[in-house]
Amino acid sequence: MQYFEDIEVGATARFGDYPVTREEVIAFAEKYDPQPFHLSDEAAAATHFGRLSASGWHTCAMTMAMLVAHLKANEQAGLGSPGIDELRWRTPVYPGDRLRCETEVLEKRRSASRPEMGIYKSRMTVLNQDDVVVMTFVSNGLIETRAR
Image (cartoon, rainbow, N blue to C red; front, side, top):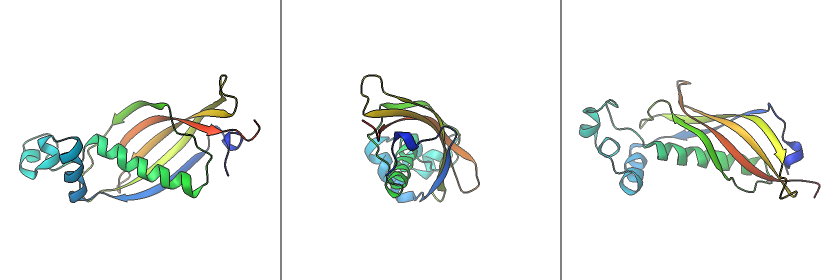
């Protein structure tokens, strides 16, 4: 099990392989972001996207799926997150893309009010199959401490 004490500032990780499907792009958009360029090839062709594109929020959800799988595989004593900072959608995500993640731990500190947990910040970079950055954000993670 990985605890707060095991997190090292500067540590990096690469993980994930998420195939983006047309069906999932449309299904997500129908339910959560029903803008025409997420729903229709014809409507998207008339925009700067040029073709059907995934919602940025869908890109976040796909990233979360990859992150949770990574944390489970590495048995981290995670306690969730109070949020993210600096979310940027850099390049559109299209059906047929394959997404992956890279992270770097930026800083960490023990919680002053909750000594049984620590807080760490990581920069998340999401890339497509051509190594083009499609999204970035800074994640704030909560994690158990070993010594309570």
